[in-house]
Image (tube, rainbow over all chains, first blue to last red; front, top):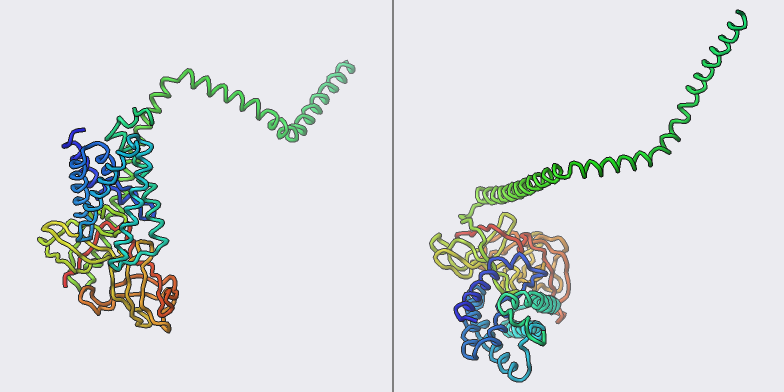
Amino acid sequence: MKKWFFLLLILIAVFIEVAFLGSFRIFNAKPNLLLILVVIASLSFELRWAIFFCIIAGALKDIFCADAFCLNALMFALWSFLIAKLSREITIDNYLVSTILVFFVVFFSDIVIRLVFAYSGKYVPLGIFLRIAFLESLYTMLVAPLVFKIVKPEFYSSPFA
Amino acid sequence: MFNLKKKSLAYFFGVILSLLLICGLIPALRAPLLNISEYPLKFLALIKNELSGIVFYHRNFVQNERMKKEADLLRQKINTLREASLENARLKNILRFKQNSSYKVIAAAVIGRSPDSWSSIIIIDKGSYNGIRPGMAVVTYLGLAGRVIETTESTSKIMLINDPDSGVSAVGQRSRQEGLVSGTLGNHLIMRYLPKDADIKVSDVIITSGLTDKYVKGLLIGRVVEIGDEFSGLSRYCLIKPAVSLSNIEEVLIIIP
């Protein structure tokens, strides 16, 4: 995959998230397109490039979020590193495993965010947190095959698919 | 001759009687006959329709295509007009608020929302060039919506009151009971730090207290829908249904102090 094309995809995903996904929320949860791209980047590029793309994606997300601290940029880079390491241990280069991986990545990201909230004194009731975290993970997992199909069609020709 | 006449009379009376009999019977027979003939008639009408459908297939097809196009066009026009009408109503409300309000306000349209699910932030199309500064209160004609947290030259970020990071000093309009209203990311806001003997009831109106300079006094926040005790047991909280529908704001007003 061309690097400039992936950068363009990140930009498009950010604009879709900011401008359109607000209308597709289910109980305040919306699909996390950028985390899907993080998974794809980690499986498609060399580690240094993957981390570079993930930092860009996280930084762009942080620009539109309220937190001054660049939490997403750091978290995306960390996910990229962990997924790249994991892909050396087990085969995740097919769309089914990657889709399940997306679910867990989004869910654990939400848990990290919850911990940061707790640390910074923000109050989100546990019920609401679990509802949003689960729905967001599920929603993103359901959207992921569509993104894979557009960005990484070779997943579908994998013998494990 | 007499015989002929007699025969003719007999015929005549026979005909008259038959006619009378038929006339008397027909109304009684009409309903059952019509009932019996309903199904054959329906069947024949169906065959006729099907035959005319086959015979006039091309004409019907062309007509159907044309009507489909017309229906789509009309549906689109209805949608456009409905959207214009809704926008018109919203803008009228904003204009009325602007005219009646004692504050100086700037109207702005929402152009984006926070990309994550963990904050409630909107982006508007007015910025520092239009006189907007961080900390200014944001309202709609229904009540308080949030406050400006960041501005660029032409855009601003607004933290809505249902963001967990938001805190608004508020009072009950009836009892003047003070508390801190913050967001929960859910449908309701939470008013915390109420004393155990707080005079607060369901459906009480909650307004801004004006204790901080961020929000002017008296802006409507919402109504109390539930009251409960905090986990610690030391204080109480109440859930508030916000007056503004925060999930679908399209236009806002920024209050210039």
